Length: 543
Image 1 (cartoon, rainbow, N blue to C red):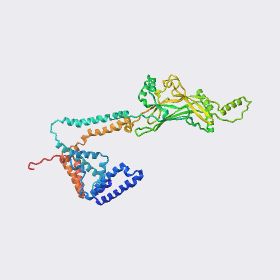
Image 2: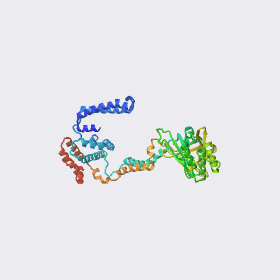
Image 3: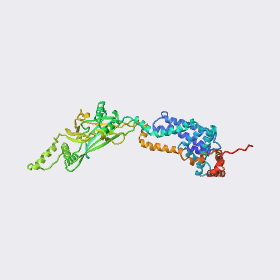
Image 4: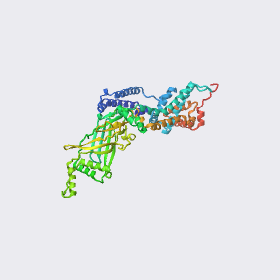
């Protein structure tokens, strides 16, 4: 487009012909040879390419007609400005509203047109012509539909012009609220398709690993949904949280009791873990990690996986934690070789202890408190968090309590887990030896509303209402500063001066171009001269 505009301004038919031939060759080479190889699609199967080629052929036909007919001898301004009707005025406004179109035209015209003006003076002349053209269109409209002096403005004009702007401003104020309300009603459910749970002691290999699939993730039943609401009926905070979700947004995840993977740990690492557990000084942390995955589609906007971690501190100073550390250590087992005298009572006790470690005969389980949260909020994007408003407030703690044991079958070892059942919870009356977790899954907006709702109500007001409000404010304020340049009774002489400037420029009269430009600038620098130049002239009687 830029090259074509430059050739047009230079009026070079030879350059236009060469450019047209090159464009025909390049377009056909691209459409029929290069593009099919790049995207592996034939031209007949590529609808967008066919549409683009259709419009390009229309351009080739018009360009060929232009080469045959020749360029105009004079290029005087914009083709839209040949008439002063209200239709031309509307097209002129639309043309000016197109981003960078006006700026590109001014720059290309200045570059490829013979002129003595600087870019700054060129811009001033173009701006004067554009402003005078708009005023001329309005003056012709007022002459075509005159308003008598002293006559009240018609109500239809008030309601169409003022009422339309009033409704527009009200719509701008309420638009963010309407958009947020629509986005809230157009949300779609976003349940997880899989869940991954891991128990890990410090830096060592995970003890328990389980990835649940769709058969272990079920929407909460009507009966359990009713029980859940009845359980927190008297808790205002919990009831408010539950009411923000629908029944299909709550998923019950059942974690089987046995780990899905064996506990493969090397003997040196197992010995290191054993030493850390029986040490009275080393602190051991039990890490409970959970994450949730989704099957994304084209209509939802959400993260493919969200998760979180929870740490249980096994403090060697606490008697209960110290007992749990020693119990897990016994389950792990270890081997240690040392020369012990059977006659020495202390050595005899150590011999018996080492025998238990080598034999791995301890088959008990250990109780761990507050491991997994029973209620988890799964957001669309971000980190899954426990629902604190739903956590039980009793002497058993806030999180689920589990029993953890090491199972063996020959040389294979794996960990098992089950939930410690307490009475009094209507949702846990029929618990099986597995862990149950309830996830509250935030609904997501469709792609239609996601770009807007992501800003929030405050972001929309800042980015839309304030920006549009400032543009509207320009219409209702600051007009007094420009009244001397917008309320011209007659702009015919200014337009004629601009047209004369274009004519002498096309004729190569550069000195006369400078003189007319200086006269035009002088008019706008002298308000008194401008008033005389733009008023209607009184005709003599003999005329």
